[in-house]
Image (cartoon, rainbow, N blue to C red; front, side, top):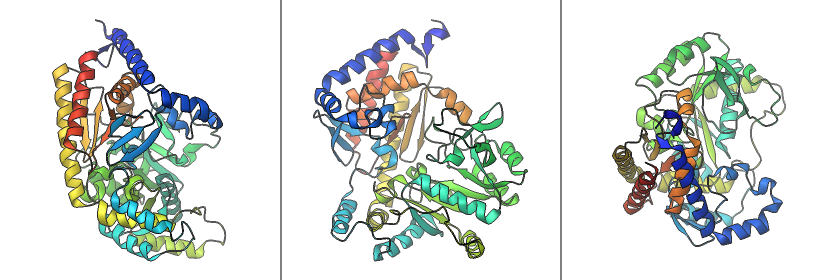
Length: 455
């Protein structure tokens, strides 16, 4: 069979046949969800509350009725092993008991009042205990946290640009919506309503390309390097040995701040990748699961950066800072943040997650080898991804080339039809403290069943 007749090693006609079969199986099995959507979705733009809900590969969205631990149930009565876990938002499982208790308790005391609580003070100490000596601020999303962190970086350095890595993901932050084309930084294609020239405030380099990073820094206009420790939200890319130490050295040498965004790599272990691997950022950002699924993000400044910002802030003209949102820092966030940091995000929880993720990684790799698929598996702590291309990958360009949307769509729907949910935008799976060994084994078995059909 010619290469043109294959996609990720699979015969195209076979892939199309299985895609049609799995889509039909999903639709036939969910008449109640389909009827409810037809009756009630018309009030929403494009018939979904958030546009990305259309990006699930299934023919139409499931309607979830309940989620508990590492299981969800839908309107048609299906029980599903959840390895997506809200794309990390529920990484510690759905509604952990300490968080649910904190929500019930705080609900009787008010939801928002723009003032701190005792729980806020306790949460601040727990943040430092978990992630290191930073001066913290609270946001609602990691997008906002990254946005505010970059404002501080530009303020204290007096420089306009952020250096990001080609193919990166830092939420919907405008400053990061650039990519490399022919070695030149340009705005990402497909941005909605984009009018500003994003290259005035950003420059892109390839992940693991230290020479490219240094070349960008030599211009003298970079306020901060913003990076995940591992590239995620794509085909996952691991850092080369010594890459992060070199980033720290280069940032210091050229007067830029190093911002580490741990929103996805908090899967790495207690303290995130930064804690596990001893990274030394000037600014630390984490969101998603940090408050057990309650919309919350945090960003923190090292003491010296905080002092520089205080000096800047004391001298700036009176007026709006462009930082902060009314509902951020509300008492419900602090109640959930405190409960998560103190009782949910523990060494014991991560030990369970790590053990389960290692089992999943090994099982998926065995299935790939068994079927001779030209694929590979990557793991960062509790986060596991199968990638439908050979590996390892070294940068965003390679990650984009490895992405196989047609194959991934079939796999996602087929896994769901066999009772397993993985993340919709890539092949990401998470193991939570609530995930059972039998759930992991069911996912491996379902993966084997599908590859048996495909290959």
